[in-house]
Structures are given as structure tokens and as C-alpha cells.
Length: 421
Image 1 (tube, rainbow, N blue to C red):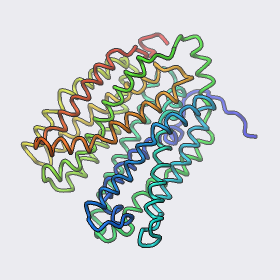
Image 2 (tube, rainbow, N blue to C red):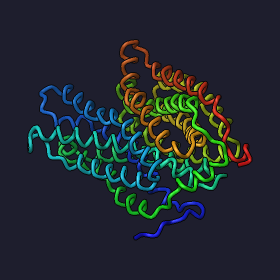
Image 3 (cartoon, rainbow, N blue to C red):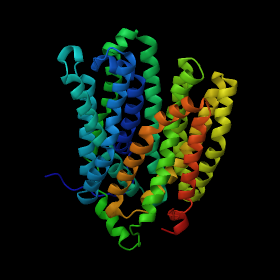
Image 4 (cartoon, one colour):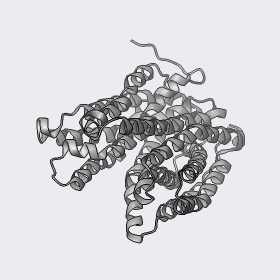
């Protein structure tokens, strides 16, 4: 029987990478599916109309969002009852099986109706697993961190999400520029998914040897007076909704650049890469500042600045319509959002007791993604279509940030530097 490992301090970068790989796969999968939705529709759905195939592909992608809250609750509760480590192994194993199965599913031309059925099943399993991944892994990183560096440890997880965005942008750019349309449809999109699946064996191997943090955290909190509060849950949902809408609105810039502004595809994919690079760097800065200055000052300042900057940024992109301005505006918004997210996440987790932290953060995050993330691009595109104004994404994002700002100002300050913990 394997000996129980004890936590004696911080984690290695490899261990942090293995824990954070689940969230990274989530963002990579989202972007890759949206990049190749046309090809996926052509392969799996026997509809003569091209728009119908695209809609069926996007609907298949969307079903994964429906089961995320269920995964967040059930696997999150597993993390609270049995431990963070078994929950992380279970969710990541499901993710690996589903993303690989999706990439290897034969076409409709090969196996008929079984093809779209298998794709829908794999998307449901993937959504369930992704929903359950966030709670245990986020709770683990916060609990494994030395108290003065919790913000930085949580930021490392968020940084890998942006790294996945950067990688997805590069993979999409390389495949679309190097392969013919027929090659993209036949096998190119499968390569993009299999690239994401490559991290699964590494993640599973390293996660097997991680220490368990739940029992130690519960003992530490027995003296701290941290209690479950519904006000924290509601504030947390609005905070995560604001961050989710802002993130997915930035992801919409690929479509916004080409469809609305008529800019070249290289500018659109370049914006994804620029946002990803800024996110990788500045989430770490946000986590560092949250540890040094406190959670509330950093997230309040960053969200306020982003709320004030989003409309001028979109106005500049719409009126000037050059690659340099588009990339610069995208970079500014990505930097401010990246500074806000780490203190937002760590503040919410520190305000939840250990006994409900994994399930709480997992369920809240999954609800925010399902309700607000899954609909953000549709809502933004619909608003632009109905109003005719290309500035509607900015107004939608700014409104969400305002609600998030109101919610986060009521959160208790939890940084050890400020509380003496």
C-alpha cells in the first residue's frame, strides 16, 4: 500500500503544472472547438445546409456546458468528503478519455448515426469532468501554498489557462495556414484535439504522488472561525460571472475582428496569442500583488480600471481598424483582467470553509461558465446583430464588471498580510 504523503511546504512547478492542467485543457478545448466548428460539423452531421451543420456542431459543443454544474457539485463534494487528490485524479481521467475519444471518433460517412451520438456522449462526459475539475484543484493549490503566497499559487493555475489560450491561438494559426481546407476537415482538427490530450498522461502521473491537503486544512480552520455564509456564495457567483463574461468576450475578439471589422485572420489569431501572452505574465503579477497588498485593493483597482477602459478600447478598434490598434487594445484589456482574476479567486476560496470549499468553488465556477460563459459569445453576437452597433460587446462586458465590482467590495479581506494569519 502506498505510503500517505505529508505536506511539508510548497509544491514544485511540475506538480503545480499537473494540478493546473485541467483548467488549461478547458480553455484550450473551448477555443479549438470554436476554431474548427465548421470542420467538425462537416465530419459528423449529415445536413446539406452548411449553416445547419455549423449550428449542430455548436449545439454539440454547448451540451457540455449543461452538465458542468452537475460535475462541479458531485466531483467537488467528492473533494470535500474523500480528499482533493482522488477527486482530481477522477476528473482528469474522465477528461483524458473524453478528449481522446472525441478526436478519434470516426466520421458519419464511416459509421453513420453512431458518429454524432458518440460525439455528444464525449462532450457530455467532458463537460461533467471539466465542471468537477476546478473545485478540487483550486482548493488544493490554495491549501498547499504557504499562507503568504496563496495568491501566487492560485495565479499559477490561472496563468496556465492563458497559456492554453496562447497555445490554442498558435495551433489554430499554424494549422489553418499550413493545411488545405480538405486536410483541415479530414484530419487537421483532430490533430489540434490530440495536442491537448498529450498533457493528460503527464497530469495523471504526477497527480498520483501529490500530498493530501484537506485534513490539514480542516484542522487549521478549526481555530480560525471560517464559517459557511450564503452572502459569500452570492457575491462569489457575481464575481465569477463578471470574470467569465469578460474572459469570453475577449475570446470573441477572433470573430469580432474578422466578421464585424473585416480584419485579416492573422490579426484575429494574433489577438488570441497576444491576450494569452499577457495573461500568462500578468496573472502572476496579480497573484503577487494580492499577497503583498491584499485581495480587495488589487481586485477592486483592476476591475474598476478594466470597466473604464473597455469602451474606449472597443471604440478605438472600431474607428481605426488597424492591426496595431486592435492588438494593443486587446492586450490592455487582457492585462487588466489578468490582474483582477487571481485575487478574486483566492478571496472567494479563503472565505469558504475547507469542508465546503471544493464543492462550493466548483459549483459556483461551473454555474458561471454554463450560464454566462456558454452564452457570452451568442449574446454578444446577437446584440451586435440586433442593434447594429459594434460597441455592444463593450457595454455588455462593462455592465457585467460593474455587478462584479459591487459584489467584490463586500468580500472580507483574507490576505495573511492584512489579517495576521
